[in-house]
Image (tube, rainbow, N blue to C red; front, top):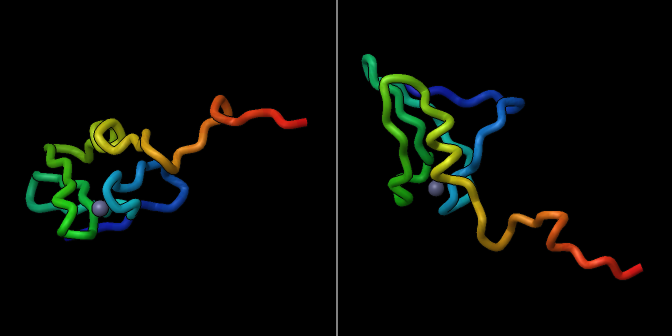
Length: 74
Ligand SMILES: [Zn+2]
């Protein structure tokens, strides 16, 4: 069974392709995974371990613009 994560729930996108992950349940095993099978990006646990997913997919490369990176030009 697979589920979509509601849009208002904060969840990091896949750090490889930027796609929002989906949830899959097989018996008592919950998987958060990137819908793109090529990424092989998944977190498997006995519960929906969004915390681990977010930690693993925290995107720190180019593309995440933080205020500290901005230069004031007047
Ligand atoms: Zn991906």
